[in-house]
Each structure stands twice: as structure tokens, then as C-alpha cells.
Picture 1 (cartoon, rainbow, N blue to C red):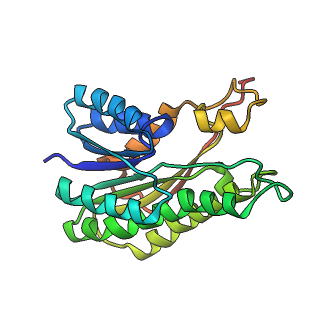
Picture 2 (cartoon, rainbow, N blue to C red; picture 1 turned 90 degrees about the vertical axis):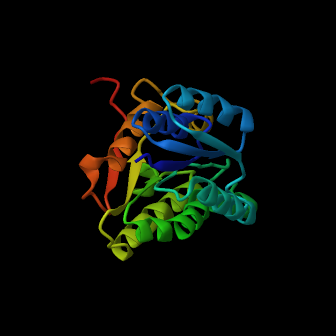
Length: 237
């Protein structure tokens, strides 16, 4: 029996790498992101692995549009079995002096509200069917403070908190809720927000995707409520 995974932020970076990992593992896919062209390219690669891949261009920060798209995906796929909440954003400047209310609201909408909406829409079906995997892509910024990243850090702490609260609430056999918290990852988002950083020890998107795919697989069937920190590598190692 083939299962279907819905991946937000699937057009690039960790989302893209995760989608392809899941396609290789035998999952069909529902791919969501802002840019249709990027999604089409990922879908083409996924189909080369034998996966069915549906693409949906949507702004996850637009609550009404996102909820409509989630319902359409759920219906078209006959139920979503795996949810990967990867879509994320950071708005700069993000320090006390430069942060704006609009920037704060947008960061929270994409990084924290969208995963909540997706879980609220899709987890009941998983629980009814007796199988489900939710993996939230947070950050080490969700475990500790960072300077000049107010909204981003707060949103990732919220996502870690959402993961732990849902894991405490969802006690159904076959359904798990976990989070991964990578350090610095070589993606367009993080490189753009840290242009002067030493990238020699940064994680690659596939490093994170491998952990996510494992949490979706049979060997992690009893892993529930985990918040897995993935440290970026010391370039001197």
C-alpha cells in the first residue's frame, strides 16, 4: 500500500531534499510552495522514482488560501498519511530596533501558524485511519536564543512547543509527532540571512532530509514527541 506525504516548502532546500527522499522510499507526494516552476521541477524528479506527485502553488502564510489547499489535497489524495511542515521565512532586520509588526506577523504566520493549521486539518484523518507521521522542521533557534532574530527565534520556539503539545495530546497507536531542529543549513534562506558566516561546517539539506525520512519510516514507529537537534559541523573537525 502506497502512502502519501504532504510537504510544505517543497520547492527548494530541505523541503525539496525531503520530498525526493520520500519519493525514493515509496511515498506519493503532495508538494506545496510559493513558486510553481520550482515545484514542477521537484515533481518531475520525484516521478522518476515512481512517485505520484501533485503540485500546489500556495502561500502558507495566507490562512484561508492554505486551508482551502489543504482540504483539496486531502480529498484528491484520499487522505494524507505524512505531513512535513518545512515552509519557513525570516524577515530582516529582526532585532528590537528594526523589527516591524508586519514582519513579526508574517514570520509567525508562515513558521508557526501554518504548521498549526496543517496539523489541525490533517491529523484527525491520520488518527481515524490509525497511521500518521508529522515532522515539523524547526531550528536550533527554537531551543535557545539568538541575537537579532527576534521573530524567527520566537516562531521556532512556538513550533517546538506545538510539537510537544501535540505529542502529549495525540496518543493514538500508529500516529507520531516529532520535530527536527537543524543548525545552519546551506539553503537560499539561511545563506541570505547570514551572508558573512563561515559556511564550511554547515549542514546540507539532505542531512536534514535523511533524519526526516527516518522519522517517517518503520524504524521510528515508536519515536513520539522527539525534538531532534542536528548540529552543524565544526569546520575544524
